[in-house]
Length: 147
Image 1 (cartoon, rainbow, N blue to C red):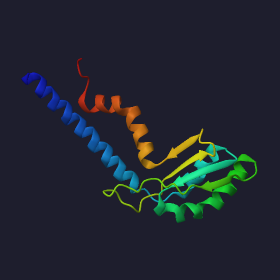
Image 2 (tube, rainbow, N blue to C red; image 1 turned 60 degrees about the vertical axis):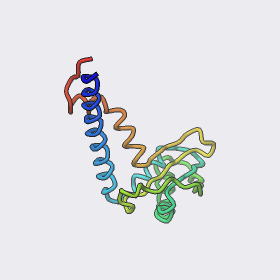
Image 3 (cartoon, helix red, strand yellow; image 1 turned 180 degrees about the vertical axis):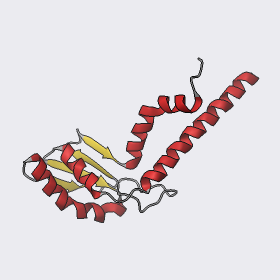
Image 4 (tube, rainbow, N blue to C red; image 1 turned 90 degrees about the vertical axis):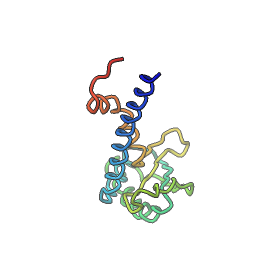
């Protein structure tokens, strides 16, 4: 019983270390400069004639400011007519209160029918990376653990 309790404490401590790393990475991402070029690239990658765009309510002005140049870049790179971009007024959740609310704006792009979604929020991107790399992170931090 005591061995099991100490193992649970070790696993909890390891989990705390990994979660604190993820929180630190999230804070670092929020300190990135405003790179509106990223959002133009996202639009070009989607390659849809009609795009449904969602963002945080606080980022709406910034997003609308980028749309015209994004359409122009899309037309040049894809050699097609400019896409119809519908800004959805169902907003993404606001930034967590412990993060810097003035960080890069977050967007979610998708086809009108909802079959294709390009989730480009910093949280979504960080979650994907952490899920994919979690075994490697644990191995580097804590070494090989016997089963």
